[in-house]
Length: 112
Length: 113
Picture 1 (cartoon, each protein chain N blue to C red):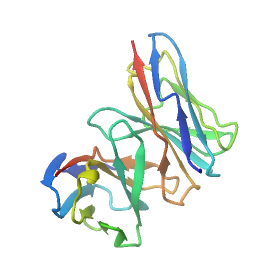
Picture 2 (cartoon, each protein chain N blue to C red):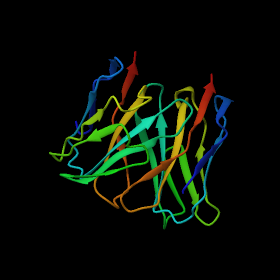
Picture 3 (spheres, chains in turn purple, blue):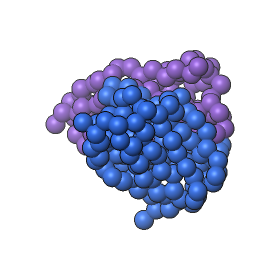
């Protein structure tokens, strides 16, 4: 059974820092990996989707990488801002039916 | 605006009552999903549907039921058989099987009194 782990569970940084969030998964036979953002009491907002054939995706200050062989993905946030404060979740899909397995998330706080 | 609408946002239920959570999408997506989120845990899949009139159980389907009579609608009923129903429920959709990106609604918070 696919297990997804996110480390650290919580992270607090001063504004302006570059930071990396980690996601690991136990079964490397994935179809895609997706990073989400969740604000308190809200739904999930898709940030980046990486297909299994890709190594990375970029959107603005965000860059996500995927290393299937080692079962790892990282989300890099450049020049962090207080508005980036949220919980970030990664999810992997093994099957074509989009049955995605989620990590518990990393709660990020960016201090002004 | 295209998107996924969940209602109600907050719901209170007495023990022994069934409640139905609504999920409507106007994205013309074939696949729809229901997840449950508990504090400090990842999302867990309750049910999913890849096409109208068809749905499959996820990891924690016991005590829940769904229907998919229309492409745009995928309601979830939390029955009295669900032992611990207090949670945050999230509905999601995707264009279709194998098409990748998952989109979510704003969620419904159910509290059992």
